[in-house]
Image 1 (cartoon, one colour):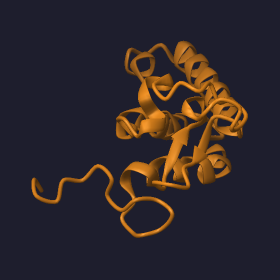
Image 2 (spheres, rainbow, N blue to C red):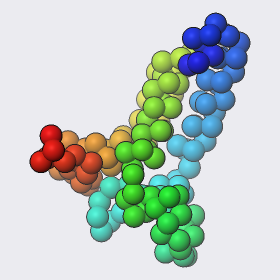
Image 3 (cartoon, rainbow, N blue to C red):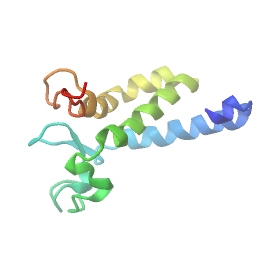
Amino acid sequence: IACADAGASTAAASAVNSLAARLGTWLGRDDVVGVDATWGGAAARSGYPLKSTRGATGDPFADFGNALFSDHHFQFGYYAYAAATVAARHPDGPALLEAWRPRLDALVFDYASYEASSYPMSRHKDWYDG
């Protein structure tokens, strides 16, 4: 976005192409994020018990405590923002967004679900604070 705002259209196109490729690779993997059956929601598999699933390290603090549901609105929000940037600036952005939608929805619903489902409702909303 900064490249485009500065008028560096070649650098902006290169940056958004790189972002789309890297994001597509991460969202296409099935060993990065899983659904936590106990608490509901998405969690990084790196924090799962060792040998329990592909990608597990046995360290609950791997990925900054993601498997302990630490700061999902920050960690998963980065992916949502990156996907929105690709959707807005990449020539194939809308099609890429649709291809990524199932995984992106899982990440976003984890921290911003507004209805009861397999995700906790309003995990990051303080109903007393407003």
